[in-house]
Length: 151
Image 1: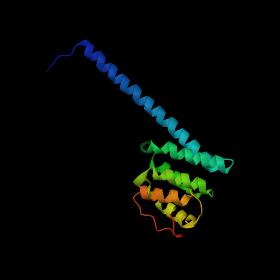
Image 2: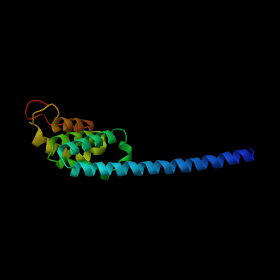
Image 3: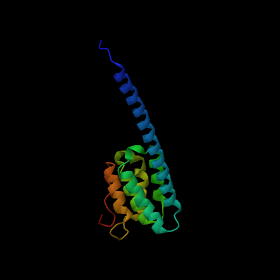
Image 4: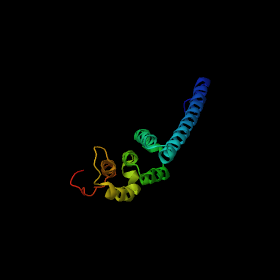
């Protein structure tokens, strides 16, 4: 066995403290992220107008794009409930947001397929139907053929 001197012991203690501090900083950052995420979900639900709600939904897409591992299944289910919005632009961004989670968000597939059946024939370059088709594809689910002949 190799004997270690006092400098080694100090370095070992310093590494342990640094690891503990970094863990606490990460936990604090995760808490702040989840607080922001919940505030943004609330804004999608209760924003004063369609522009505010749509921008909040787009922000959810951006927030979740790089942080999918930080978000639990309960929050994914909460995000899926935002598909009940009557605003097609909100549904588009929420669907894209759910697509960020890939197969983890498969629990949202029935809701997405239900909404797709209702919005499949909407006209426009960026409708919720295209967002839903993207999300289903990311989940590994083949969406049904378009009802109106175009995706």
